[in-house]
Amino acid sequence: MRGQFSKPFEYRLGAHTSCGCGFDRGQVKPDQPREMEATEASLRRLRAYLGKALALAGPVELFSCWEGDQGTVPDHRWKRGIRDFGPRMDWFPDRTFIEVTRGRSGQRDV
Image (cartoon, rainbow, N blue to C red; front, side, top):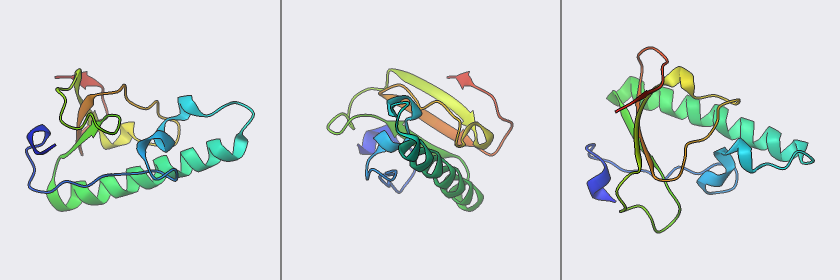
C-alpha cells in the first residue's frame, strides 16, 4: 500500500463496524434506524479525526478500497475539503484516492 501515498505514515481507518463499510450510508437498510445512527456517528468521528490530522500535518490522503485491494491503481482521484465530510455524506466509490484539504469545500476530480 506504500505506493498509494506520498505521506510518511499510514493508518487504517474503521467505522463502528471495524472496517470502512460503516462509513457508507448506502449500505444501511431503511428498516435499521440504529445502524444509520451508528453510521452517522462514525462519519462525525471521521470528520473530527481528519480535522485534527489536517491541523497537525496538512493535507490528508485516503484510499477507499476493499480488503486486499490496497495495492491496486485507483479508479478515481479526487480532492475534497474537510466540509465535504459529515454525517450526511455519500461514501466514495471503491478504489477512490482522496486528498482532503482544509480549503474550501468542493468536489474536484484530479
